[in-house]
Image 1 (spheres, rainbow, N blue to C red):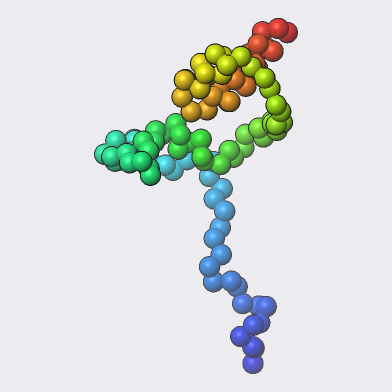
Image 2 (cartoon, rainbow, N blue to C red):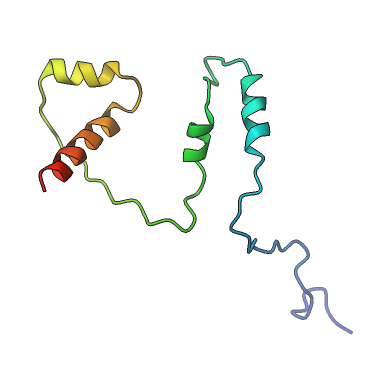
Length: 104
C-alpha cells in the first residue's frame, strides 16, 4: 500500500516547455483588437511596439547593463529631449551611442 505522498506519483499540473521558436501570436488580430479599445488615464493608448517591448527576449543577446550617473546638461537641451515625449533618457543614451559609433 502506497502513501498519498509517494514519490512514484507524477505531479498533476506540470506544464511542458514549448520547443517551438515560432510565435503563435495572431498579430493582426491583436492590432485590430487594440484599435477598438478607448484609452483612459489609467490605461493609456498602447501600440504593438510597446507590447512587443514587454515580451521576453528569448534567444537574443542580453542587453548591456546601464550605469547610473549624474550628468549636467544645458537646460534648453534637457527641455528639448523631454519635449520629444516619454523615454527622453533613452533618447539621450541613443544620441551618445551614435556619437560614439560615428567617432570610431
